[in-house]
Image (cartoon, rainbow, N blue to C red; front, side, top):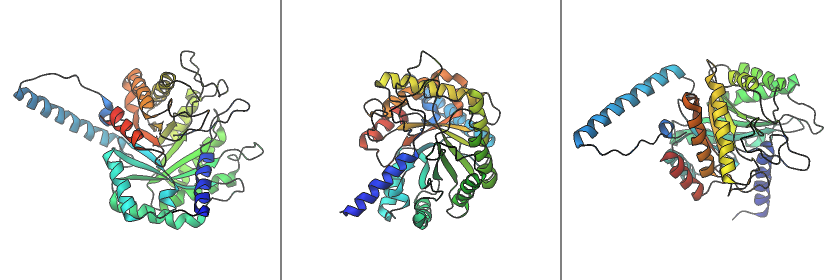
Length: 379
């Protein structure tokens, strides 16, 4: 059993992770946290048709040839650095700090394989207000986890998760400080050089439309990482979409969204944009699904207009209630996937730029969440 001090430490770490996710603009008096997959072959369901046995074989062989051709073509287009498609998940300090045993690590790998998840955003550290990285004494454990997990799941894509608050306690911008930019860039490089991550998942909160300091930070991180390392960034949804037909989150200030040009500028600097499509504060599943559909269609459309845009990953919720922003009876995997499917359909050809879904988060996901993921997405 955990001791009282261990329970307090775990609660503190959980609180720290949640603080690191704070994103978006709230109305006065309202908290505004921000939280964070694609079915195989886009989740297209073919109609049921009865065919004689020979025709079934011929159709099957024809389909197999098409699938192989698509995989080969996409592989050539995407190059060596990025996977073609990727379902993902966030994992926390239970894995990277607490030195889980071999049995637990094997069970995690089996769970992810069974659910077609080949990308992991693994918690590493938070840049605190005093300018120090949190829990640096645990970094040896982080390195050990990466090595242990790769032994049992060698094909996984592991990204080190760093979080940075973009504003100081007085509300001033931290990202405009060149020293802080270099500090983040240098620590990002350690993710690859010292810990053997495949790249970086960078969570900067909040980032408002047109923030030039955020772009400057991404340029410095990109240059320091080098082109061989993968850069994934958390991106806020269009909290209050500029479309009256889309439900508007009641706790969010109007006009809280990124303009298309700013989305494109970020997409040119990152390899992957993870749209954190949850924490909307909406109070019905149908409204939430419509809101998610808008996010999918909008970000896919922006990527489709570019020659070399980042991958689009849609974050979906599997975490405990945090009212008023997140109600699991409204925001859950089933309602999120319904929205994703609608958005992909509405996006048309641009849907190809959405490469996967990301489950937020492993530490809160229960058997109901996993069942919803398999039933609504994988099947």
